[in-house]
Length: 363
Image 1 (tube, rainbow, N blue to C red):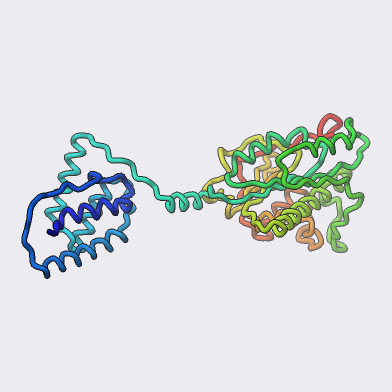
Image 2: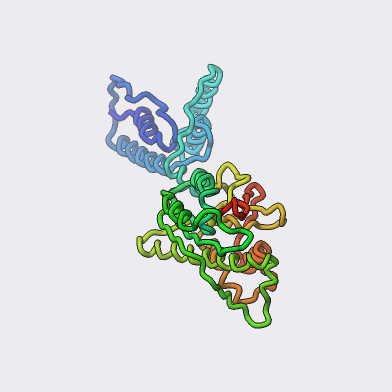
């Protein structure tokens, strides 16, 4: 005997995943002990109808947010396809109304795995890989790195590798070190959780190869003793990025996100997470903190997609192009990123503190 209603209920139960809810019916069908005569042709037509219904249910989807809405939508669609009639829809609607009167609560919609992945990709919380470049002065790492590292790890989801690329300072008469460099080198090497560590003594002379008659070091708008350190800082950024690229090739991996951070900064203000939606999406946009004193970008920290951070990290080599005569660190960075058409957001909800450099700090 063919029992059409029972088979329809069974099909809906078996295809319950398309409703993204719990079972609508009991886990088994009640046997109805009746016998009905039938013609073979009628049974064949019924099987064909059920086959069509199976295909319909297997493809049916809904964007409704509650299970009751999805049930009603399903029966509306079944009427359009002539799998049931309006009277059956009214029965379902009355049933839903009765459940509402007795304050029955339908189970919540279960988000499928594919939907979860889509949401994760949209706000950037997928299992991606992030590279962190820590650059700056060896003497500063003991004062600021630990809280900064913890903040970065807890605010960016996914796997993370950290690359240390630190140099020593040049001796300055009024800032003589109170702790020997050898001691600082040993202390830096003791830090764990680094993928690669590179420590080097300061390169005596760096020549950015300014074109003739383009600009002078006075355009950097910094005290004379800071100019070599500025070159050193930018040179270190470029080298750290190259280090990450070499590591990718050697180990056959790919980084999606890069963080640029200095050894002498701490977060003064930070959003609950760096995994945010557009326009603050770090998967597509370079995010940098706001420098309140300058009213412009702060060059101590940045996070974003690899291609955008690559431009950021290689600005040392842009000096030879003479794209502007103003070489002040923040103003030049702001102009340079706009000149390169990097998608950038200066985030006023992110601000950093720079540790002072003196005999008692970063020495």
